[in-house]
Image (cartoon, rainbow, N blue to C red; front, top):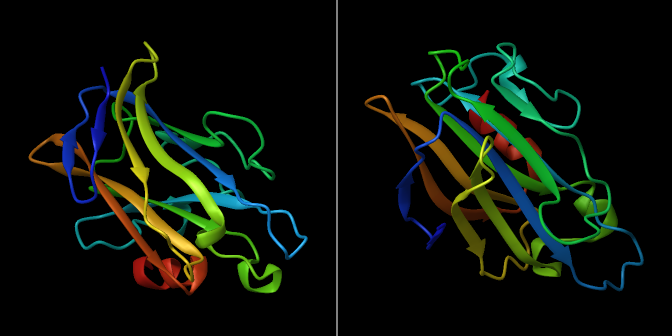
Length: 184
């Protein structure tokens, strides 16, 4: 049975292979432009910086050098129910230099399209066991991010050899570029 997390809550991930599923729905918008939300992961070392440029996982770099983190691809529409994008993580292969994985969702070309997370609803991140499909945890973002164009959904981190997930739910206005600047 999955654990439903609240913002700031942390939980152990007791599976060596798991999938991060991200989902959302968009409101009808007066901008007349379709939404394109993108999941990105930053694979960080102890210094909270990218281990290398190749450890920034997104629609143009779908897998980590060690093949432990694999993004299954960009969903351009968010249509349908369930996960809109998924990232598979295999902790048995992960580079020991990686101590944290930050999961961010951004709106592609948000400023040009006049879009923000206030126009997005039913956002969630969930983690499930890749081998059994059993859901381990889920965090539903219920805040109204009315001006934000990027949201850190959560972070997966290693403490004393145990991998944990923290529900973050922190938005910011400056898009993906701001996160890249923080973690480079």
